[in-house]
Length: 407
Image 1 (tube, rainbow, N blue to C red):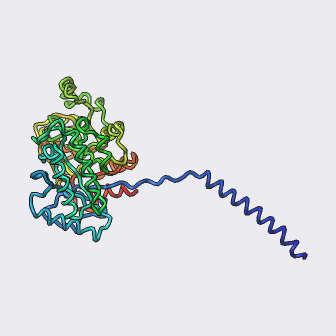
Image 2 (image 1 turned 120 degrees about the vertical axis):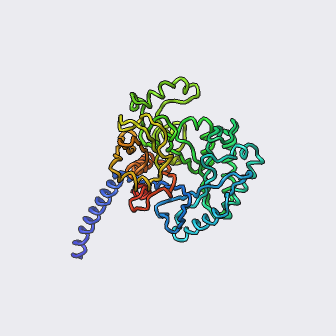
Image 3 (image 1 turned 30 degrees about the horizontal axis):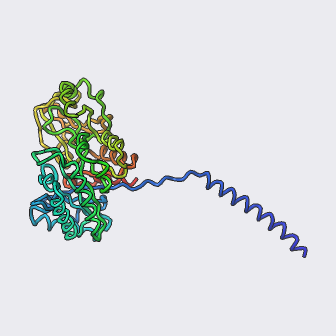
């Protein structure tokens, strides 16, 4: 009886202490802020098979999606122009055995690819194309489709275009979505859009976005090789008119301000941040936006040394475009080419004062910043044109992009 009377107070004391401890832990748990888990972003790479095609050696572990490029609209259907492309695509799809995470998609179209306007013009024509696209993806066991129509209602590169393209593009994407969803494999549906505002006047943006997974915004070629002035062709940062004021580029555009205004063109310097902000203002969901990076550069000749060649006049394209591996191997190590960093555009450029050559491009620093921006803004992710242009070195553009995407 004595021992029972002694244990009883101990039990009571333990029970009180346990209760206090539990309440304290509960309070700490309630007051501790929840840790935000970052959603993974997509890393999409367009890919044109190289001459030395070795799909087993592609860095697929650093990609979420690879987009084989291109099929075309041929006789109203989605087709390859040659049988060899189909054989190579099958080899790429076979890489899912060792990379089960990878989504293998097919792109249709590209710069100068015609046939879209006629194909989308009638319900009958769209039905024919959609059925061919579904049959194609079933035959090759693909994970999705990217429509690269450049551009609805705009006769770019001499392609056919009509005002009705605006509505017909919506119908096309809606019908593709419904048909692709009948396949056994889950299908990712994307389309390539321009990195400049006038494009969006020619598409029913929010209606289209209801039927697609992502919009791949081509935030490159913002200044083309035929431009009378140099500039950043794939900048991230929000460049203002004030940042360009006093340069040849600004004077050239300012002289034509009224003429551009009549065509609905503003003088806002183009960039990834600017077009993303514009799309978000239009109501596009951030998780559907995928910004672009260029694995190639644009170069101009006859560029004066003012401002190290940036926003200056030129006498034409030095090279239409240069793959990044060429820039890495030939230009970056060359002492005549000085690398400069534009902290506003968040973009690098090279200038050769001796030969008056200016090169705009993406490097490992700029692609990392773009990827970090996509994560910060909670965008869908980042994509690039195109994988075959990257260096084979371990510190490649894709590696910098991938590393930033998983942090």
